[in-house]
Length: 101
Image (cartoon, rainbow, N blue to C red; front, side, top):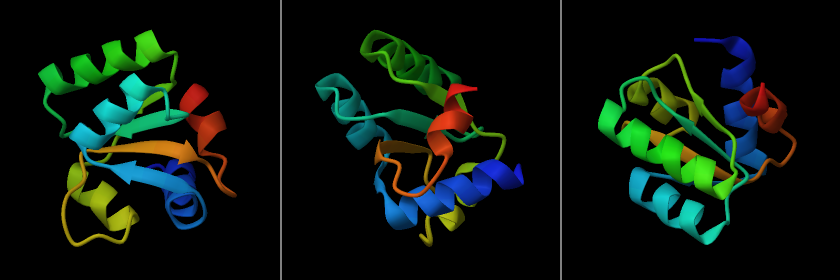
């Protein structure tokens, strides 16, 4: 798991405004409320393609993480897997720069 992205996701979740789950992220992408999207490597390709298209239409940077949904859940201090997170506010995190690169 890339340490830089891992730390940024933890910081964004702790100090920023992050939504979790595919349906919430899709809804907020359509409404233009997100600044960035990160999805896990275990998200099915059909869903990932759908997210990529929505993000492109909404002009929101999106990044596929190299870790699984279980790892993403642990980064967000949740006892369940998380396939997708959407960032409304980055807080003290530098996740915005990482996602754009």
